Length: 187
Image (cartoon, rainbow, N blue to C red; front, side, top):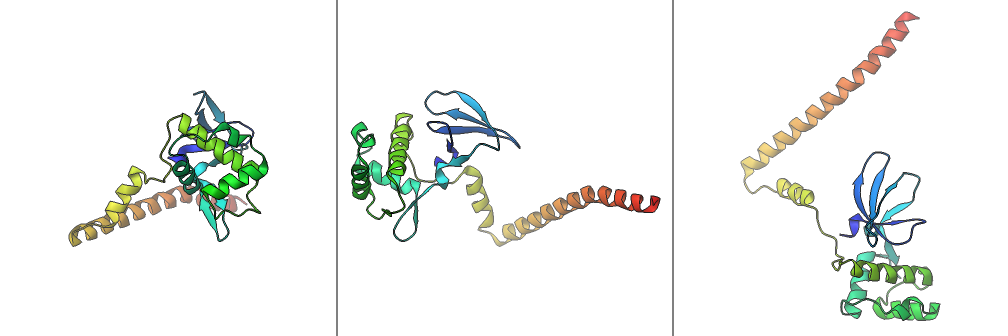
């Protein structure tokens, strides 16, 4: 679920991706339900791509959110926590996620994570674990056929698709080669 939830630099709150084109993305505010366009120059990051520094490596954001959810019994974090002093924010995250790197995770980061957690809960998003898309499930099922004859047929089909796409690429590449040849002949 966090894959389609976005944070946009310079814009408060979180957004849900509605559609994506070549040079434009349409997003919707989770709170206001207002749709706005986002262009390639805007800095956009999916919550599924965010990690929190730990003493050994990095932990994905969903793990931290799940720890907060467990500590708060699925309720929102108290507003006093969000406006707390830096030492209070660090102490809270140490209770929730003791392995976080205290030197590289700043109080502003902790505050942002807690506000994101509250915002996600307020709009009804309570499941933070990554889930496979239906297309990923279908691809996984295709790779592991139970019958050997199906496996051979699928391999042959995959080879045919690769050959067809290679043919399409070569067809589109030939006109540009031909134009170069014609220019060379004219000189």
